[in-house]
Image 1 (cartoon, rainbow over the protein chains, first blue to last red):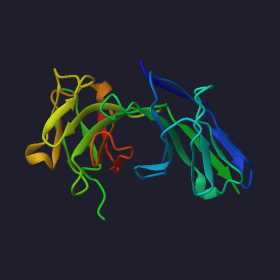
Image 2 (cartoon, each protein chain N blue to C red):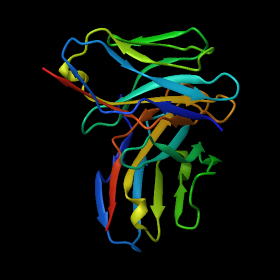
Image 3 (cartoon, rainbow over the protein chains, first blue to last red):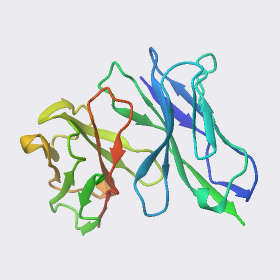
Image 4 (cartoon, rainbow over the protein chains, first blue to last red):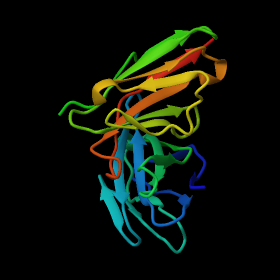
Length: 113
Length: 114
């Protein structure tokens, strides 16, 4: 069945460091891929998305590229800020299967000043 | 634009008691989802509605969980009787239609079963 695997956390970085959070997926067909973020005390928010191979999603300085050949959708940011501290979830949606989201387990990012 | 509203935010109950959660989706959103998020895990879909019909409830433990979406707007999720392993955050989300790529999430209800 469809699944998403994320790198284990927590990830602790200093401010202005480079961030990579790895995400790989298993799916039949051509899913859409997402990164959601959950700030402390808040609900899940869509960070970025990509709907087909080689698409790059970007938002708030974060980027991720849909790599079909490696079944990956790694999240990157060139310079993190303390305000980026949150839990990040990679997810996929198989458009043939009602559009429900299948999430990875989440990666906690802590950015220190 | 108002977001997805959920209540209560927190609930503590004893095992074998019953509990209900309420969700009001974004106005005009036909699709409504209930997800369960156990601590340290990603959310898992429990049930999906399209208007007031069930699209997917394959992961819903139907012996104790039930959900309804009357008139295709608000929804309630009920657990009766609760077990310790039901302790989790219950997230409601909505989207314009089932194959649209973005779902909007509420803040969730944190349930603790003691």
